[in-house]
Image (cartoon, rainbow, N blue to C red; front, side, top):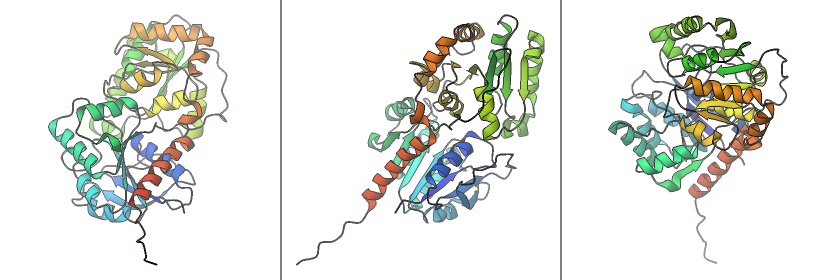
Length: 380
């Protein structure tokens, strides 16, 4: 009988990459309808417009992270399943450096797979200690890139035998209709906030000749950024576009896009631009979605982009270098054949969610087999 899975994570209608990832993975592992989610919910989380697939896993318990000791009930809920799949990201669990996930892990009676969305190259002592203790309690650790695996084995005291590299999944965009357009289309999407590097993409846009491509910036402001700073970052970008004289070439999609609308937008673009400032980002769902859709990418040299794009399906540029970014965009737009050759090197079906979920199933199968009791021999 197939294993049942309990997931611990943020979850829609929360709008964040962790929630979106967990919803997709849980849906693809919910083959028997027996999967359930323990949802992490902060007191200030009002949710948004994300709609779940009809086959999505149900929420079986909510861990209100502003309530002390909530880990105990969350662990009890996860123990009702055969395997616990725990998403780990800094800032989602209560306690110093998210330390309240530790007693939960120790209270689990079922195998635990911990998916590491961030592996810092220079953690502070507490961040390092918490992650190392997570590694001790977990039955398996999953990183989504080999870069993250290497960071983990080189910089942390972990058992390398526990680590599996399973890529971030991508949806299938094959059935989306590609819209025609008169001008080349550039695209960046995702929750907006400082660190996305959109200012460098706008400066690159200003360096492109007329008629300029249309640059679509899609996505709401990150809820935590909106709460603390309002739309100051978006407003600063609009002001910059005005100073650069590119306002007419920028299209803002300040809203949540459902899967169908996002697929149409991705497939209508000629180049996806990822100008991120981060030198730590070892996982990017946006990057995987672009590659999975077969759209060429121009990205700054953040770790996941370096690993995935070094041998195909896009071009890397230095951080905060609009001249190099503009040159890469021009290169892709001037040679459509190059874009096809680059995207032809993409992971293809191996990046699709069904293939990714199958690897989690195989990992869970090994863990449950290791835990299975050995039948005692009966003398004849």
